[in-house]
Length: 160
Image 1 (cartoon, rainbow, N blue to C red):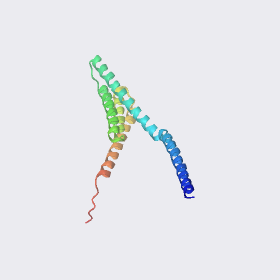
Image 2: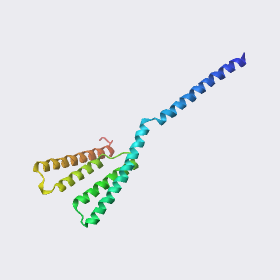
Image 3: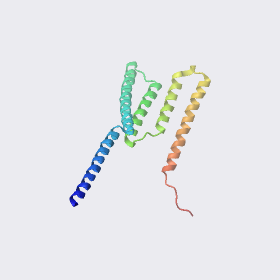
Image 4: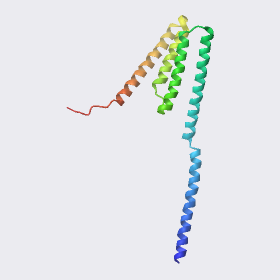
């Protein structure tokens, strides 16, 4: 009788072990099909592609500058935009997040480059809109930076 009960307990444990094994196989499947991991891998792959394409664009822009033997302000601003894109990718890999102010600086630089490219023939209202957009982006960067500084700074706990 004791042997029968022990066998029953063992078979029950074996059944539980089999269920655990099946669950582990299911977890391995769901681990493989984890959407967060898939999206994260896709994001990292895209960032690597963006980094290589940006470096390629820098080489092309420098070759254009060297063949024309002139450096224009728009060329320098474009190289600055490329440098900011590469810096944003580097910040992502170092801190695992993209600082929100970097894309704002890229947008400000791109708008300034657009204003310069349009030259003196630009419509006045367009110039006002574009410069207003630069001002709004600069204010947004200042507000975000100010909030980040205030969040990081320790508050005084001494009440006198």
